[in-house]
Length: 383
Ligand SMILES: C[S@@+](CC[C@H](N)C(=O)[O-])C[C@H]1O[C@@H](n2cnc3c(N)ncnc32)[C@H](O)[C@@H]1O
Image 1 (spheres, rainbow, N blue to C red):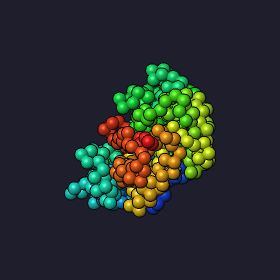
Image 2: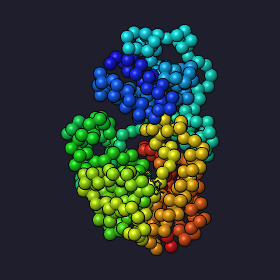
Image 3: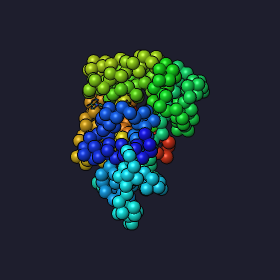
Image 4: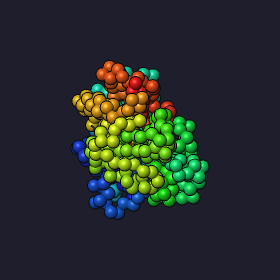
């Protein structure tokens, strides 16, 4: 496909997203009916679509509208591209530029955030608000976690390099490698298939590295999902016993194949109370995901105040249920991939009011300045 044809494909996909289709689904639908497109075309189209969604407000402003065409015009205008070359009207290219489209609009470019979220994010992020809002407009790094239970960071880097995947250690945590080249080969690589590395953002890894984990502990991952945190814990401290639970057991389907690759043992539990008490219970709670909106930018625009209120209530319920599983002297850990105070420090403060038998050991927010996604972690100790 020509560069202009890729832009035209992105325009069509963005029209679907603007009509309410989730971005991943719209991309899959397009790929199914466009067998002529190769993997490089699909990757380039995906990048266009995600760039436009990350920058939906500013791109719409710069492109003079809110449909796919206006968004792509705005994205390319912001990049300083020669619009006439793309919007040429040639075969498979977008229709030729109209007179009104050729002139850049004047005025202040809006922030790429839903209006209602600006105040809560400003209050939550303080001085880091502007940098974070800007960061959300750009792609996130692709990060691997080295499984120290199987290999060293240097060996993992060599194994990846032998398969054309170049990486660099990240300062935020010793296990994190940022992928600089060859990201599309990761899932087929021997290093990945043999469990030397997993895909996981650096902030999640840093939070796990700070948990009070020790050999011999009995550990419960209470909101385990696909097991990312259980696997990270087992990679760090293999000689503990790991249990995983999720309200939706289907979400734990990947844990068996992933733990097999990693050489970890994780026991799935439907009713964690039957194996309680635990030395450490981690609640990696369902959240807004605002710290990861660089990766799922359409979620940023779908998120509502009502959804935030509902999530905060669910998180409190999860903490209340999980605390009962922590043994005397044990640790309750809480994490979100959110920047929002309501889901993080406010949630912990409210929990401590309800449960004075817990003391706060630490709580910490991770931001883009640290090198990874937005994330929050807290550790509370039962008296
Ligand atoms: C942020 S995700 C977990 C991601 C996972 N820890 C990982 O690292 O891959 C939150 C998970 O909490 C689960 N969940 C939601 N409500 C829950 C509840 N009341 N009890 C336990 N798990 C719950 C969801 O099904 C979802 O899988």
